[in-house]
Length: 232
Length: 50
Length: 227
Image (tube, rainbow over all chains, first blue to last red; front, side):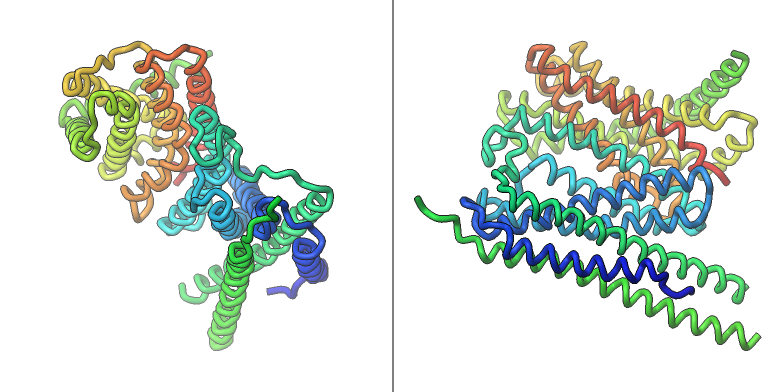
């Protein structure tokens, strides 16, 4: 396995610095929210993690299409990496969403369209991994993964809209009549800056993790081929 | 006017989740990488024997 | 234009094969039917409701029934192909792969509709509610089409894995949620006699889903049956 490219080393360092800076911003730069108190600070990374989850799914979608067209192994590796990272960060988003809801709306779960869609996406990710686990042949595994990543990604907007229309017509007691009740508070400029910086930070984090994970995937692939050659 | 709600415990829980899960993932990546390294060394040995 | 006729003929052949084979044994249809009726029965005891309460959730019960019975049909339809080696045979034939997809999807759709054809009168009789309204029938047509379009694609994949039957619901249900949500709301609204304006968004959602997923499914179908 070749050594880490310099660009990756630099990217990793930059990401760590940004993450540190973002955390400091959240705790010391962004003001305390007037109604919700300290728990509101979770919001910055909660949304950023959700954004990362979406990025993972999107990367898997593109990689899926690319694999079906080119049949190059690298796209399968990228696809799995995207799903894996997306799974992790979407999980963070869902759990923090629940933690945020508890003190604010006195419930562990609101059927908020975004959170519900995030959970469904998480289930699709998990199904993707289970599908792959059940297939022996690497090429078939890659094809099936690609197809499901494409179908899964396309279902997300429709799922979101169906739940949103559902919610605006049937407001749940908690959160009033607004289908987007969750997350409504006014953002001051400092909050907005912290928010945007968090999004940028997590985007860098995603890119860094993806690169590392893809390298690992390539390494594993090489070993598999070597193994088959030696033990054949 | 009363001040903001005291939600400190929830904030701590939230950040524990965020950094905790990221850490677990990082550890899993590192451990998987090390396993691959070991496998690679093993395979190198096998290859040299042949 | 000369490509259309062989395509349609292949499609027709696949549909005919499925219908004829099923007609001879009737295994799958009877299984789906009995299952559907049992589900309705269980709901009756699980959700002891007065007539008014029941009216509100009739749409929900119907669609849960269809969703689960549909899975049975999809699994069986594909498993039969795989086990008897028919799938390989079909693929060897000089036929456009998409004709196979549409043939299977159409056959699956007809099976699901036949389940509905029996479930509706039974439910109507059991609960003294008239389910034969054109609006409801339209929703069943649209909803089952979307379900079957994705289901046929996904069942083709799941039948080739180690986990087979159990995997299909895991793959299918998250994807098919827009259909279930829209179908239940539209059905319920039709049954409650609401204004068309209220029901329109749900019908639109169903149509969009059907178009998008039927198109995507047949485009990628080739990738899941390659050897």
